[in-house]
Amino acid sequence: MGGLSEALHVTAVCTVLFGVVGFGPTRLLLSAGLRRHELLWVAPVGAMVLVLELTVLSYAYVPFDIALAIVLTGASALGIYAWRRDPGLPAARSAPEGADSWRMLLVPLYVALLIGAVALIPMFRGGNATVIGNGSDAHLAVGSAKFLQEHHPTAVDPAEPVDQIPLTWRSKPPIYLGFAAVARLSGLEPYAVIATLSAALLALAALGWYLLARVMFGAGPWTAGIVLGVLGLNRIALHTGMHPYFNQTWGYVALPFSILLSWHVVRHRTRGVVALYGGFLALLAFAYPLALPIPLLSAAVFRGCERRRRGLPVMRRPRRPSRRRLRWMVPLGLLLFFPLLGIFEKLFASFDLLLYRKSLANWGGDLTGYFAEGWFFGVDTAPSAPIVLLALIAGIVIALRRAPRDIRSGLGAVIAFGIAGALYFRTLDYGWYFHFKTLAFVAPIAVAVGVIGLSRLRHRWMAIVAMLFVLVVARDSASHEIGITFDQLSPQLLELKQVDAALPPGASLRLDMNPDGRMLWAGYMLSGQRLCSQRPVLDTDYPHVAISRAADYVLVDRDLRKPSDATGPIVKRIQSYDVYRLRPNLAGGDRCSQRMVQTVTEKTFGR
Image (cartoon, rainbow, N blue to C red; front, side, top):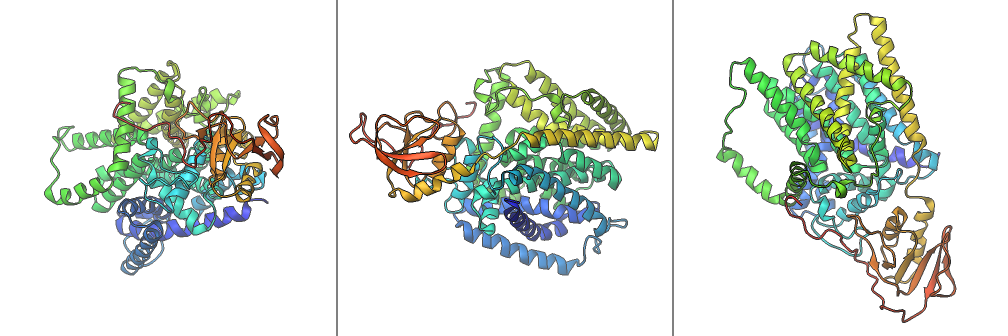
């Protein structure tokens, strides 16, 4: 099966890398109440710690390979210390009585692995380890990871396929540093890694929903397993991971852990859990700042309920950070000034947009319409959709009514906020971007709560039938998404590397092809040449090739006619493209360049 060996290789790298980096912090920082499921925390914590540590080192101008070596060496030493201090598998000395055995914990790990394999079916079907889906950010995601393997996040290098981190992605280098680490250790090109890494992230997110069900709601392992399966096969979650919306996928991973840890911090505050909570919240902020209100809203309600239970005012007057905290917060804030600035820019721009009801025309992304609401809840627009949605609503009511007040109020507020926001954006012109993002983060919470509620129906047989019905419908919905997902970076585009190798270094090459995603990938594969086009990809935030008619050579899509200004025989022929020489002295002169034209050159708050 094509791509299988590469997928297994990348999966092994992710497992070892996240496991090594995550074991020490997990064992040392998890509180006793969370140690029952310690094995399930290691990989998600490892992914979070890897991203944040590489971010600090990279912005401190430590070369990438040295930074990665420091992280791995430090993680190994910390893991040895943690093991010697508290040896054993999940049932270690500090774990509470009744901790799940490692055999029981292997079941959700195995199901999560299957979910990752399901997300890779389109890649296996295509027969190559490559980029799948139609998310137009993919070329920038792959290029950013490749760029960060050799350069500082604020550097510029026209010789790279992506010559700088886009200004609109100022907050996102942390997650691409994690991507770069997996690609470096696997020895594969980032474009051969991204699909498998995205599948691994979907598996980690599914583990987060399992833990949320087990810890917050006290659900049994089978009920939590159904939650894991239903959300692992959720159509929009798979769409996000497979197409790939890479930064949103990282945010999706951080979401369940941020909510769970915020609740645990309020109830059982320990320094270790506070540190983990801050780490996952930071990961969510860097990856997808617009999702921050969701865990922050739930955290505010959890805290308010706890203070009210203790007879204290719901709101406490903010306190100025102590000098001890400022000694590390100020230097760290200065070091991470640019990614933090990117977070605030994104938040202020969206608040300004919504507060003053400005046009959403420029916030459509690569979407052209609304997704069906049923997709977010794991159902298609089939006759079963109303039944499943009604069942989930009933389950939400049952679960929240039986939950403690803080959980009922916190998650109820988030679900109500998300549903109201989605309905509001449905009424706006070009509101599909915010509609998609709102439901993509809030609907999984509603589904998890709904499945937990269905497990608590009065009659056991009714609960089993209801949960299995929701799971089967989610599986069918997932199969429809898989069926329409194909390669994005095709073998024909990969062959353009042969053209790059055949032409003299730095030759100018005009791209005569349709201005769509294929031209974006052509620019990536031909980055060793000075590129241009008469019709580049415009009207987007993406950098594009220079505009020029004159060049040394022209690359012609064979579906188009040979240009009239080409001369002589074919210089290079591959499967779908031909290369010709161009006549010299064409009008306008040769303006081709290795440096991409940045369409966004300035950002200000509120714009």
